Image (cartoon, rainbow, N blue to C red; front, side):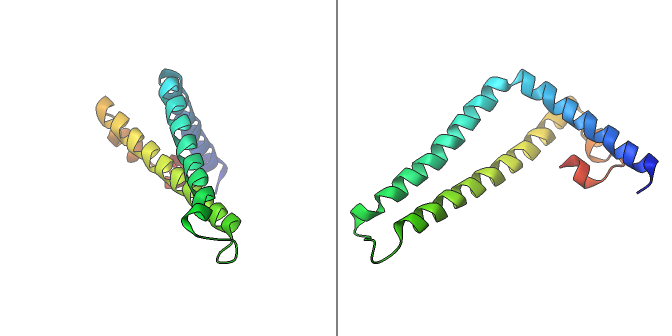
Length: 115
């Protein structure tokens, strides 16, 4: 990658960061609500997994701590993926509303810079 190409990609990356910063500054309360919602969702799955012994699943049959860890990691991964898809959908919606979707998603930059 040449110096000009790297500078071009870095400039586009800084532009995307600045746009997201402005959006977060505008909608920071909603970001806090979604963060709290996702945190409570993951913790509730972990709390419900801790009660598996009351359903007849004893320590001898399965390791409850491994099961709880498995469910918590799965919930965290699912939350992360849903947030990634939400952010992509939010960017597309925002660009469509502004009428600038062609400028952003058809820009001559690498897709990794978009992500």
